[in-house]
Image (tube, rainbow, N blue to C red):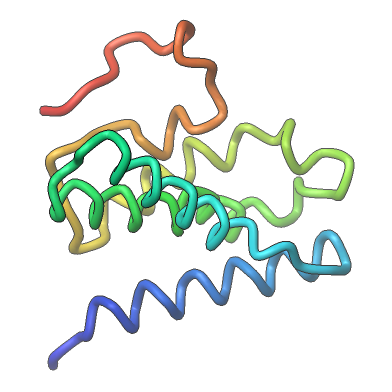
Length: 121
């Protein structure tokens, strides 16, 4: 069976939009906006095309852990529910995208100065 990774990625990002719509009762296209800003920043910092592509994937899917954590998410608790970071990191490990980086999803709510052992493999 052939899987089109781009279609898989876009489908996953739409699923996250629908989850956001269900929780917040509207959608801000949060994942797509984060991906756009990240991709633009990647260009400003002269990342390679592969690095920008990886950044785009991680940005689009950064809240994928919310899919497994819906019972704990409310409008008020959305940003505070850090469990979705751990769950998301586990989910993304199964995706057939870049394996060069670790803990991208896990630490996406952390301040840079708080991150320990961050980096590429």
